[in-house]
Image (tube, rainbow, N blue to C red):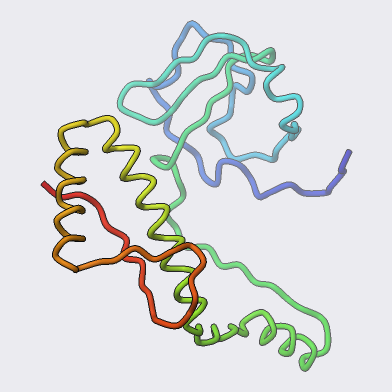
Length: 185
C-alpha cells in the first residue's frame, strides 16, 4: 500500500455544467462529481474489476458515461469537459550541473550505424527475399490460376537468362543479390 499526501490537483479542474445530463433514476457514488474537489480514494487495477456491476448509461450528445459500481454510478468523460487553459509545470533538479549534463548527453548520444560489408548486405537481402517468397507462395497456393501464371513467368525469366539459381552454400566468388518480389497480373 502506498500512502501519499496528494494524488493530484482538484478533480475536475473547474465546475462542469452537467444540467440535464445526469439520469434521474440512478444513484450516484458521488453526488457532486462535477464540482472540483480532492480525490477521496484511489483504487488499484487489481480491485477495479471486482467493483463493477452491470449497467452503463451514455449521456446523449456528450462523451459522459455513467458506469454502475458497488458504490453507485460513477461518471467518466473524455475531452469535451477538458480544461483548455494553459498550465505551467516547473521542476527543480538539485545536483551537480556537470553530472546532470553528462547524463543528458549520454542519453542523447546516438550511435552511428557502421557501414555494412558485402556479406551483411548479402545476408539481409537473402533473408528479406525468403520472407517475401514464403508469403508469396502462401498466397499462390490458394489461387491455382495465379500459381500457374507465376511459374510460367519464372520459367521464361530463367530461360531468357535474366536470373540463375544460387546454391545455399554461397562461395563468395561472385556477388549475388536476392531480389524480393511478388507476382503482378
